[in-house]
Length: 468
Ligand code: NAP
Figure 1 (tube, rainbow, N blue to C red):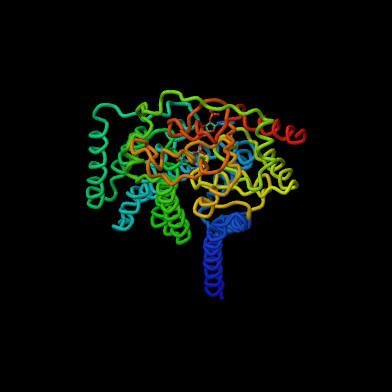
Figure 2: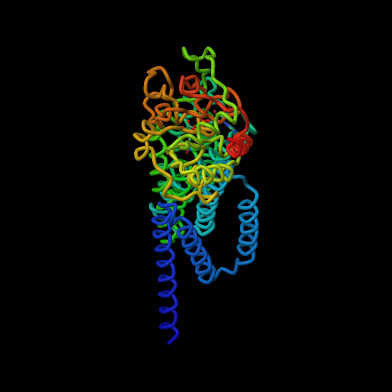
């Protein structure tokens, strides 16, 4: 009877794990559309709660006190950061989360290695050694790499690529030592000191790999590190024989790789160029660098152009996120719609500083999803638009990406905002975008700039609309 109830108990636990894994799959599927993303997020969280509760019930080691404390602390920090961290600081927060994920995998693998060390009669198999090696190496690289990414994004250290003399050779040497360590550990699997050294070397490697990457490329690196944290967790799943951890880790690993690929593609750069290209290291000097005159527009001029237009395309960019002007944008668009103006929003895949940045921002202001169009859907529409209004965007509308072979943006697909009959740009001054280069669109004969913070400018244009 007891055996039967034990078997039923284990069966139920496995079923609960299976349900949690299924919820993770559904969550990922739903996250792919803004309409279903909230539900997806909820289901993913539900799956995670289920996984934690079941693991809790299954645990018979009696070490529940520290685990419970960690859960409470983690939950408090999670709620605090969800409320306090600004949208523009999301990449930094994700960097920290990735780092913690990485270090957790390292600690799990080291703890298991420690267990074998004190139980000499237990012989760790090759799968255990290889998984531990992988979990420690990738987890430690993720941890220190993510911390450097955080420091760069938070501007606690220079965002420029840092490449010291001989750094690449030293890094290659550490990679070699790390690879050789695997063969050593397969032969001496209970050598706990070797595992600890491995963690230290991989931690140094994480720093050296991320230092030469410019702060501007950090979002891509964070997405890559996110994938690493998943792979490290997956390996930790093999170490502790947890199917759920293997599945969840593999999902994070795969989605991180897909996202990284999409971001590189949208910037028309290879991953190798992002990781080893030291983008943003040199001061880019192009023939466009001498300052060309830019026509200034007053809010009243902008209001008149908008009011007389039949078709307006809005191009949001990083500056919109900085000024948090999404609600003001919605208000002005509502006013224009009431006047019979057709409004649509052009969303570039890498506008802002993280994937989906503009979608999230506009969703915050309840801008209808069906007014948002991807680059491929809307690019031909600019030619028939009366006005393109660019709000805090720069690189994603830089026409030199189409024409100037010397431009670092050359080849990147851009929104053809310059092809609209009139172009209104809202920006604070002559500040450059993420790529650090001039944008000839701003000097075009059909373009004019309303200078000032995007939020303030939108308020002024909105007031002017009521006057004209
Ligand atoms: P951007 O090229 O960085 O340009 C932002 C512009 O906003 C600047 O020219 C700045 O000019 C203006 N601005 C800043 N604060 C403002 C404020 N408060 N009010 C008004 N304007 C303000 O932005 P983007 O066009 O969105 O392009 C994104 C760039 O990030 C691309 O180069 C992309 O490759 C890169 N990137 C994106 C991702 C991603 O996942 N989204 C990832 C990696 C890299 P002023 O200083 O003159 O105001």
